[in-house]
Length: 160
Image 1 (cartoon, rainbow, N blue to C red):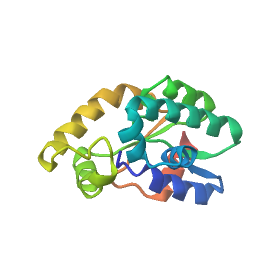
Image 2: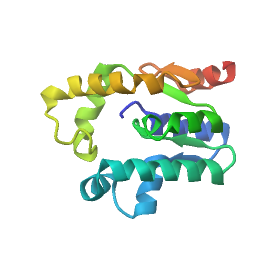
Image 3: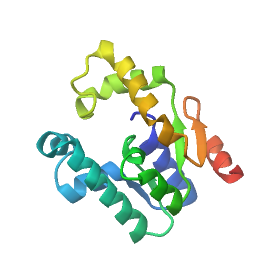
Image 4: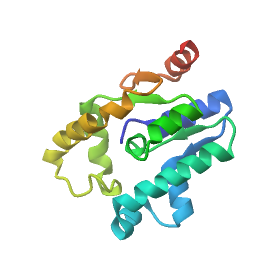
């Protein structure tokens, strides 16, 4: 959350001339409600099931594509294994301080942090990252996102 997956995915898509899909946007389309509404009305468990279904459908219905997943997507229903079997998984590793700075501006649109105080946000992010690190570390490519450029991203992918 807040690592720039959608931003970099769109840029990569343009440079590689591949279709781009944002998993959350595809879920919103399929459910005809916002992520916030899904979390509120149906709960996180329902969202994670839908996320898994939409991820599989995107990967299976399209050839080469770039998919930006939500930060929790790799951590549920063996999604990380599915993603690795389908293609190359990239982890945009962003420093906690950069994440805090970005997410403070977006709290109201992020269901998982909406009700967390500004003072508690950093510790929440650290805890989330610790819980998800096991999944993130399984990525095929690890990129430090804080000072990333599109040229560095392309070179890292080509070298991998």
